[in-house]
Image 1 (cartoon, rainbow, N blue to C red):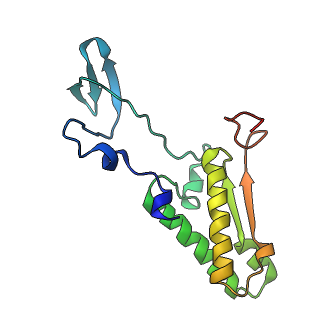
Image 2: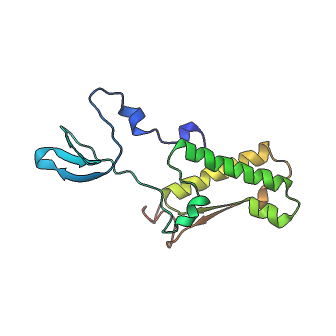
Image 3: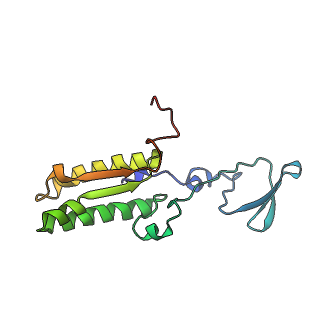
Length: 162
């Protein structure tokens, strides 16, 4: 993925403003009547408070998957995913066994929410580019992207009509 495809950190967007402070941590208590929060064990006063509750990567209670599935929250994560995909295609290019080649040309994405669907599109685009430009022994028709979803349909948070 290119740098432009990764969300810009909030600190880069507004952190240079003299009247804005961006902090990362855990809020353990809020006192709106006093305009105060307890954050990382310290009390802070504020004029205006924006709580941006970020999200972490979920592994569906399967922490052992972390080794095989890097998160995709920062640019370094995206670079690692890209590196792994290209290395799998490099191995597939040199694999004499058709079954091994097929396995290496298959990407599995767990989670079919907005991030999973977007990832499937980005992986498809990367693999298509790589097959057209870098790998001459691989058959594009043998490349597969498997989107695994625990629910009844993809993009469950959106209207079914969409």
